[in-house]
Length: 157
Length: 157
Image (cartoon, rainbow over all chains, first blue to last red):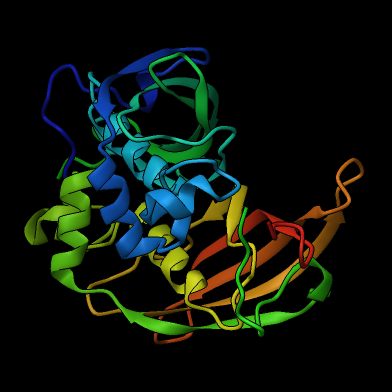
């Protein structure tokens, strides 16, 4: 198996609780919102301006799963990278506020907990706390993923 | 605001705990896995066959967020529809097993809890339990979403 050869890459050994990472930004286009919704969440408030105005969202809103996918994109762009990848076992997710066309999103990710494996000393589970903000600094998504992370050298062949 | 005029549509009033819904099926193409990953989760094990073989996934695997998005697609296709839409406040999600090229997914969704709003009698929160299965009946995702649902007539203008 392979791990990153990037000398800056972070492994389980390098992480500490409270360590914080910030992503770049990502602008969400109106056409992207509609295209994602057509493929994965074809409900009127994600697809059509007039229907969206008359909906509980009072205007076009991105699918929460689109926000989640964009958040993942932003997380994978964070540097230094996680040398064994961003491999999620699961997560808790919440969408306190809709994402609108032309919102500019960014993610702040903090290490919440580090749980070394009892049976496999080469790895552990890292609980993160990720907030996705819009351009006004409002939280549009909170995400608490649990990632599998390996120690340096564990995946070297 | 608007609600569905479909006479079969279900509203908060119509739901009972334990009520179960089954989706149609959805075949996950290899090109789709790679295209989703290029846009939202560009990690080698979602993008490239050789890198994926040498990864912890031992072969190409869909992004968990792709599985989540496909699950949403399957949920929105369930009939009868939810007349006020499928509007999630948040969810717990887990991926016990990877989704592979040509897997055929389907969703079984059960009503776990119905919590009428204390302050707004026209709505409530419905907790669901959704399992996404592959063609061998193995669970590839569990999802516990909390949805806002309205009573019949609440969104009529």
